Amino acid sequence: MSQVLIPHIPGDAPFSPAQREWLNGFLAGLYSYAPVQPAEAAKQLRVALLYGSQTGTAEGLARKLSKELKSAGFEVALNSLEGYVPASLAAETHAIFVVSTYGEGEAPDTAQAFFQQLCVERFPLLGDLSYALLALGDSHYEHFCQFGRDLDAKLKSLGAMSILDRTESGVDVEAPYAAWKVTITNRLGEITRQATVDAGAIAVPSESATTSSTLPPAHEPSSLHTRDSPYPAPLIERRQLTHPQSSKSTIHLDFNVAGAPMLYEAGDACGVVPENPLNLVHAVLDLLPFTGNEPVEVPKVGSVALSDALLRHFSITRLTRKMITHYADLAQCKQLHDMLAPEQQAELDQFLHGRDLVDLLQQCPGAIQSPGELLAMLPRLVPRLYSISSSPAAHPGRIHTTVSVVRYRTHNRDRGGVCSTLLADRVDVGDCLPLYIQPNKKFRLPEDHGAPIIMIGPGTGIAPFRAFLHERRATGATGRNWLFFGERSAATDFLYREEVMAMQADGHLTQLDTAFSRDQEKKIYVQHLMMQNARQLWSWLQQGAFLYVCGDASNMAKDVDHALLRISQEQGDMTLENAELYMQTLKDDRRYQRDIY
Image (cartoon, rainbow, N blue to C red):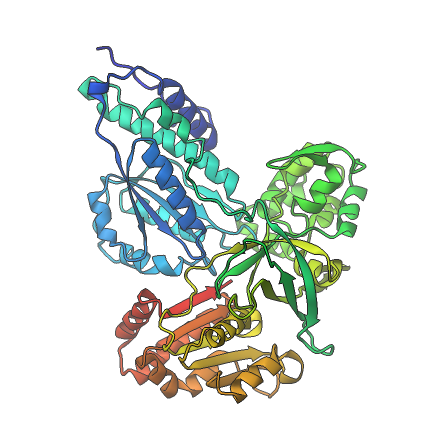
């Protein structure tokens, strides 16, 4: 039998990595139609498919990929990095990682132990492992996809070979995932065929498998109201939670979803699909040679007017490095190019802070000559997630959210958060807003209704704990409830004061500790209250309490983590190493859960 060799683009060919990857995938797909003798079909290629997920996105993609790879004829071993022993990688020859980045460039809680073990000194080399990696993150954050990058670098340092360049995706993950899925399926098919050439046969996945990589399985479950098809929920109440004299503005929103198939659990988040301010869209168009009526194509949407694309589909309120890079090339602007040099990162960060598309167009005018050039440089406008502050048991048919309204003035213009100002200023009660549910499986009340819980949520971090308290009451949970809440001032910023005080008065809230940082000369935060109550907090933990943290990842969550570590050492009479192991055990047992952002 004659052998059919699959052409492959060499590494030194004059193509970019993305072009080379696409061409290899194309050639692999083209030659996958080579005839196969059934009796000579190759043994299935085994692939370890491993995911590290915080909110469920990475897990969902990994499960979807697992089904499609199995349909394509591969043997797939799907596992969460939570509990996965890194040494097991030594027994694998092919692995795929789908991982998200959490907080300030950290691994998801479920993957931290795995990565720590992988990084121990003298970890065994993984020279027999070939892998691919899809890294997920939010491009608005400084440490975009940092955990994926760190994991990729660590695997390479251990001798593992990457069969594809690392793929990174922002929160708008559907299109990058779809392209990556086709590429990885074709690449695995190519590896399978090359492995069987020496045996005198070209074994490939069946023709149905090669086409299934572009079509979802017929039994793939779907939700009626998702990010791509949100539910238009009427806003039935909006009220101010902070006092008019407060330096901040935090609002409570109540949406009616009665009759809509939007099931959620306490701890989940609500996705809101925003619109840009109309006056900002007009300001952008005033700086361009367009009327706004020009037809443009928006992926998954179709043809719309340029003004509508800028209003509803593309981000124009913030700048990113990629936008600066694209625009600097179009404008041939030396000032922008100079800021992109690695040694000028601080200057670039300063320029990006507080500026939007209008500022960029004013910086080097006249560069954009077509609507296509404009849209090619803009990221998609993505939904904003807010912790749900209602309980499905106590508030059936309703979704409550707690939103801090972002407003500021910089570079001689008033600005604000694209979604928070929409919710506060640009919609009226009675208007409908597109919503969907973002499950948060890693932030759940204990199944044991008698278990005590400790909730640490300063600012809008109180939102899921309001849901927890209402849920525990509605379901008759008997476990004790302890809340740590912090804000600037008790007089102006005590969110849900009446509800919280009433729950404390009737005993449902067993203990309440508040830290109002600006009500005394020396600032007090929630981590200070933890230390003041260290003995009692340790006692609760020894009695099986679950501890939850919600809020700011950059400072608060780290300070709380350090306080808990110190309490474990002092109250538990532990060494630092044993205290760290104890905290990891709490996480492994789902007794230490965080929802930080």
